[in-house]
Image (cartoon, rainbow, N blue to C red; front, side, top):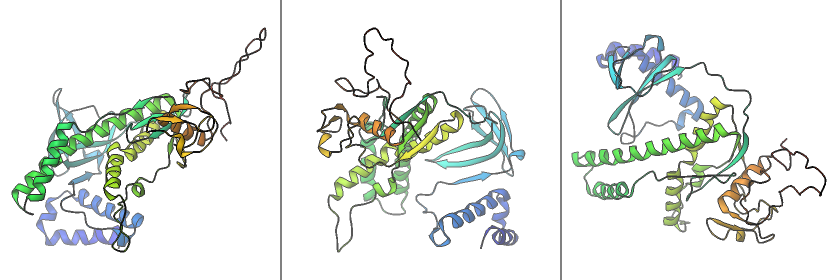
Length: 366
């Protein structure tokens, strides 16, 4: 079954159930459309009911011409939603265009109202910046080939201790009890603040990268496979399960996938091109001589090539390899080597004027 017969069944169900008639009709239709799209993209037999404990309520009003928005004062505004009437909300920014739809969602006990707006902004055809390679890490979330480091803590030490105590309390509580619901609500409030900080960090970093650079090169990481469990099965149990679980938590905490989504979103307004390259051996390859050796990475932050002796920050060296893998050369004066880089242009002979060169040298991009 697709959307059309289910919409007809919805009309029949409204005549039998009064509670269905209380809901806005467009909201119910949008839910059926989401179900139809999920069945077509993921497969009918892979679609499952959402978990009662992990489900965040939300519904969408697609008729933008029937939504009215008014500003009451500096802090508050109100919106008139079909069949619900006026809803007062905290005014954070002007809509900035024609409203196409509105979404009401609940997270950690708070309700949010967001608008989809058509701002008529076109993507620029050309970006005047230079390419940059980005290495996503665990100790430092984002490292660029230009030597910039972007990182922050998303959970304070106090929040970490409180969350651990709540987890212990949750393990001792009885399922279905009021105490368990209060504990889950307290955990959700802490995690909501962590998620907001992570979203702010990824949006801020994506904004800086897309405004300064014409091409952003990322590693094509399969994060779902990287964060899989190492438990194994009864016949073949896994090894170093606790260490793998800690690595999975560290990867998910840094928001690698969310950063890629934020960069693609910000690139639509700046004209920046986002490229993905093969991540194999980017952290073990010397960016100067291209020698591959796992022993070259002495520690998390130190990289010393075993072939040519080139020294660099390990994450910066990996970011340069990511940029080179996309067919872009590293800036001639852009490395952080202790000695003179082999990519540095040779000095002109005495008495011969220096010829202007391009800001990027090396193998040209295809």
